[in-house]
Amino acid sequence: MAGQIRVGNVDIVAVLDMVPPPRDPWMMFPTTSEPDWADHQHALECGQLQLYYLHFFLRSEGKTIMVDTGMGPGPHPERGNRTGDLVNQLRLKGVNPEDIDVVAHTHLHGDHVGWNVDYTGESPAPTFPKARYLVPRLDWDYFTKPDVIGSAPQVTNSVVPLEGMGAMDLVDDEHTITGEVKMLTASGHTPGHMVIDITSQGERAMVVGDLLHSKVQVERPDWTAGVDTDKEDSQRNRERVLDVAEAENVVIAAGHFHPDDHIGRVIRKEGRRYWQIL
Image (tube, rainbow, N blue to C red):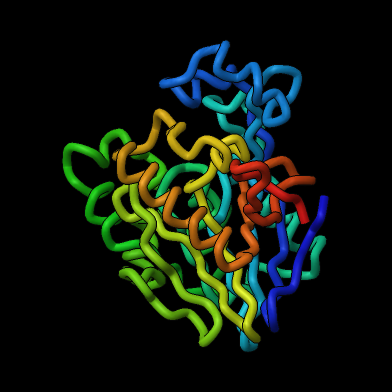
């Protein structure tokens, strides 16, 4: 795994929380069928779509910023009873929970908020005790609706408690974390989905959350995940970010890609876009 990259003065470091069971790709992308994948076997593993729950921490201007917090310790029955390992993997990279200054959430799905709250003590506490947890306001507004929150246990268990602990801040488009790092709205996957934009020393990168689930979407941005709340918005924002990435040579960090593929650039060859691994 290409574990990290430096963009200007900012370090981007990958941490693997969990590997969920694979699935048929058309189960993830329901507008596709088996024949559609014939020319995209390079994006599959043994004919299956294998996602990875990779996340990233950044070092910028003296701050350590965790982007999303994985699936959580588990075991997770809906993911084959597999368990998460984010906190241990952070420690192996020399980062303890108390070293995290900011947790920046791209969105509020279960595989991105799972390590927010520590339930192992006498009472729940933030896993990252010194961090401010940044939550997209539009996602908070959506997932806490009475008719939605009942089917979003990850929000009840891993996000709502942060409000009572005084550890959570709601943020909007272009929220600045440091002079080099900000959060930009790229909705569609969820109503408030955001990407993390990094600009330093004339170089640029983005941690794209679930704007991309598979490198096939670089070639086929019209293939949207079944779980996207607004599929037209998701496609529109994916195409917009890919346009910027290609035009400006932006480094992209995509946490659901294979650990060998998760940091790269968008290039054009013979009139088509491709994912170029760094």
